[in-house]
Image (cartoon, rainbow, N blue to C red; front, side, top):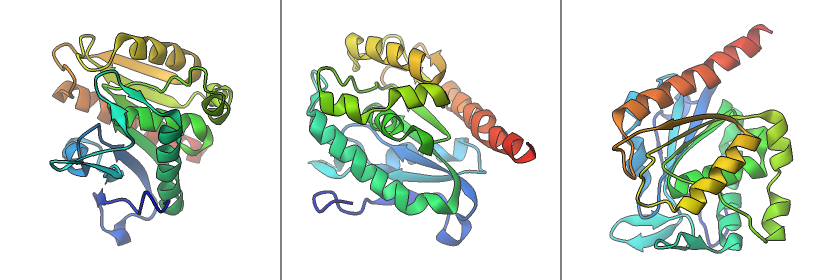
Length: 228
């Protein structure tokens, strides 16, 4: 990690001696939240995985954190700050990934922006990605971001991607959703499910679907590859 982003606080589902040889799911919380938020989903997800829920590096007060500075009204942010945060996250994942059979990312809201950005920067590193009530970063006119994202390589790999959201999510602007639709349809193996009444949150049916996605797209895919 960088001097400005020290080693993250992580909540693990397994003790260190029990993690070797398991598939890893890295959980990335939303804006203003903390590492214990998504960790509450773990009892409802497949037990074969090791789950690691990270705290974002930038404190906001009142026990909340953010991955990088963000205008919550417009979801405006600095592309450079977002890239630095994602690269710091990758540094931590790179330090632990070799003891696991695969790495999957699971991000909520701003955490989904982090997860999809990391997938686009290093598409060969991830078995699957789960995005909940969030969006993918639009590089816009930023040549730096366009060069950093390797969507062509990602499209060739068609990494499985689960996107769950409420059609009437009051937080994520429509233009962010429209861009994310275009990006996902051209770049990943998309499973998209709408959950009426979820708002900007996660509902039990969605958690069950995430569990099924992890089982079929990661666990069964790995077993099939092992038999090939």
